[in-house]
Length: 142
Image (cartoon, rainbow, N blue to C red; front, side, top):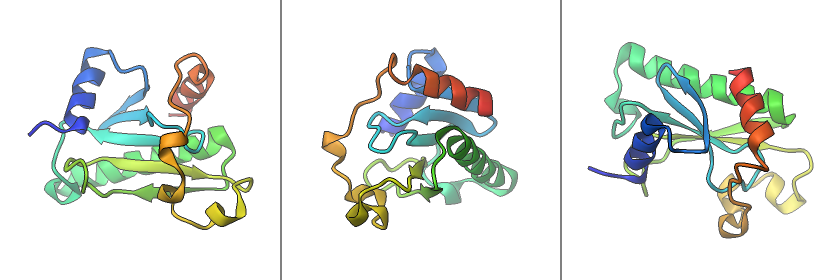
């Protein structure tokens, strides 16, 4: 199966994905292509698997630990209030974890809503120049 996750991991392996933050033991930390909230990141497993339950024992624990480490880095670098974590796999049926910083400055109707309540189509796209300092800081924190 070839999903966007498979294609992105292939690009990361080839060194051609500019959103790359760091290679972690279980996979790749990347910034989201849509920066709906500054610092939105994902953890992509390498090798790609269908879902969390396809990982057993140490591999599963490593993925979850790496997800939390990425959340720690995003929290430290962005000054976010908290981190939301999500794994769905409905649209892209391959394991990937969303790491979403939440800020005290978010507008009242959205501050308590799930991150998908935002208008993702209107969100700023990842920009290698604008986001270079963020990438470097997250990499250093990891």
